[in-house]
Image (cartoon, rainbow, N blue to C red):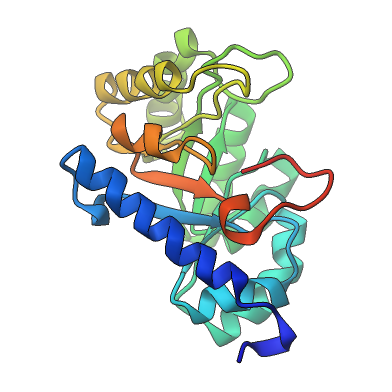
Length: 232
């Protein structure tokens, strides 16, 4: 019996996703523990998340600082070992809230954000792990650093803002075969000495694992589809 009258379907789908991750890892000779499942709970209310928490999931991704701020303090009071990831765009005026709330931020993508995060991390003495978002498809409507500018931006984060960068993140163009984008992200990470690769969503996480993903961000395969929301 789940809390709040929520359906247990999400817990069943979570178990299926975990099996698929383990199988994908086995196929390419990787331990399943190498891949962190980020359950993307954006747009879903707290009562829909509880079944996955009860099933043992502790790593979650949210797109918006404000939504997460409303939803997660209460859940964290009940499940204090939750690790919360920001996977959506970050505005510099939300840096204070983001540093206070999130354990990992996947979307560092411009100097203004790097500067704001550095300032808030020093002020709060709190250091969430940071990923730089790379726009591997050079899509004008999408956030992220262009691949040819990635090395210079990573250097700015490290040398100017004294930020420790944990890895890179990408969202390939929906119409493209994702493998080349994942391979490109892995190549940029390797030459910059970065081990973290946040890549792969519900439709393509097996391909991402083959290319070395350390974090896969999976929403609809766990929580189901929500009208008018992009699939994660």
